[in-house]
Length: 251
Image (cartoon, rainbow, N blue to C red; front, side):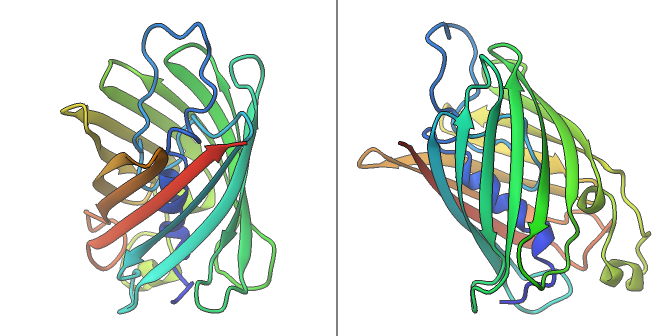
């Protein structure tokens, strides 16, 4: 698989992994009586404030078909863990990411810290694409994000970030696109029929849409996220299929 455009696909992997009940919603407060974010994915290509915590281990894999400006698919995989307590202090999760599923020679790290302000609202900050090996074309991207459950079904997130949230690739510029995007990102996730989330997100460069659902297979959670990326002509060369699969458990 090509790794030249992995940075625009990678967030789908992490989103799926953090969607599972054992990861993103681990160790809820005993005082929880009102709204609480559901266990389905809440974005496609952007961070949300909610994350893994409470001694949770999570894993995921995802990809895009085709990669931007390529006739090949691209993919990545991750393994991570979440610690702390965002209701009493800070929750932190970190993920080791494999960027090369052919040779398994390129790795990076993502780190996210967050605080639960109340039942419905959280704030978070993090960094993506901290390269641990040679190779890969992405620079570190820092971000701040806030997430809020507005109603029983509606989840909203908005944030600002650097690099991947506002700087397009050389291929985009060569194709006639402007160099810079908005550096502002956001997502809207709405639960339909008490079964899955319909999601739209803007990652600072382009618009994406899809769905996410968490299944349980013999009490093992499996989050599935699928969607279409680059829906406008603001970046990329065509609409792409994206997917992510994730699972997690508490230790």
